[in-house]
Image (tube, rainbow, N blue to C red; front, side):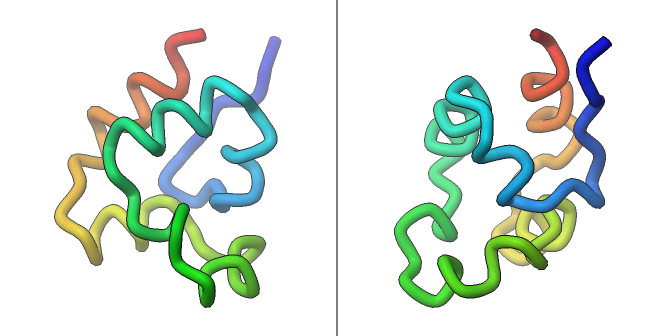
Length: 67
Protein backbone atom coordinates (compact mmCIF):
# COMPACT_ATOMS: atom_id res chain seq x y z
CA UNK A 1 0.00 0.00 0.00
CA UNK A 2 1.43 3.42 -0.94
CA UNK A 3 2.38 5.80 1.83
CA UNK A 4 -0.29 8.30 2.74
CA UNK A 5 0.66 11.96 2.62
CA UNK A 6 0.05 14.00 5.78
CA UNK A 7 0.48 17.64 6.75
CA UNK A 8 4.00 16.64 7.85
CA UNK A 9 4.97 15.29 4.42
CA UNK A 10 7.71 17.33 2.81
CA UNK A 11 7.45 18.94 -0.59
CA UNK A 12 10.35 16.72 -1.71
CA UNK A 13 8.33 13.58 -0.87
CA UNK A 14 5.26 14.81 -2.74
CA UNK A 15 7.24 16.00 -5.77
CA UNK A 16 8.66 12.49 -6.29
CA UNK A 17 5.29 11.59 -7.79
CA UNK A 18 4.21 12.94 -11.17
CA UNK A 19 0.61 13.10 -9.94
CA UNK A 20 1.77 14.97 -6.82
CA UNK A 21 3.47 17.60 -9.00
CA UNK A 22 0.27 18.10 -11.01
CA UNK A 23 -1.87 18.49 -7.89
CA UNK A 24 0.51 21.01 -6.28
CA UNK A 25 0.59 22.98 -9.55
CA UNK A 26 -3.22 22.96 -9.65
CA UNK A 27 -3.22 24.65 -6.24
CA UNK A 28 -0.74 27.28 -7.54
CA UNK A 29 1.73 26.47 -4.80
CA UNK A 30 4.27 29.35 -4.91
CA UNK A 31 7.08 27.06 -3.74
CA UNK A 32 7.17 25.31 -7.10
CA UNK A 33 8.61 28.41 -8.75
CA UNK A 34 10.43 29.97 -5.79
CA UNK A 35 14.23 29.81 -6.14
CA UNK A 36 14.70 29.70 -2.34
CA UNK A 37 12.32 26.74 -1.95
CA UNK A 38 14.70 24.60 -4.02
CA UNK A 39 17.19 24.81 -1.13
CA UNK A 40 14.58 24.08 1.55
CA UNK A 41 12.37 21.57 -0.27
CA UNK A 42 13.46 18.64 1.94
CA UNK A 43 12.44 20.55 5.07
CA UNK A 44 9.29 22.32 3.88
CA UNK A 45 6.25 20.51 5.23
CA UNK A 46 3.09 20.74 3.14
CA UNK A 47 1.03 21.72 6.20
CA UNK A 48 3.25 24.74 6.89
CA UNK A 49 3.22 25.82 3.25
CA UNK A 50 -0.57 25.57 3.01
CA UNK A 51 -0.97 27.60 6.19
CA UNK A 52 1.36 30.34 4.86
CA UNK A 53 -0.53 30.64 1.59
CA UNK A 54 -4.10 30.00 2.76
CA UNK A 55 -4.46 26.70 0.90
CA UNK A 56 -7.01 24.17 2.19
CA UNK A 57 -4.74 21.40 3.51
CA UNK A 58 -7.55 18.89 3.99
CA UNK A 59 -8.72 19.24 0.40
CA UNK A 60 -5.15 19.05 -0.93
CA UNK A 61 -4.32 15.93 1.11
CA UNK A 62 -7.57 14.29 -0.01
CA UNK A 63 -6.52 14.76 -3.65
CA UNK A 64 -2.93 13.63 -3.03
CA UNK A 65 -4.08 10.46 -1.28
CA UNK A 66 -6.84 9.61 -3.77
CA UNK A 67 -4.56 7.48 -5.99
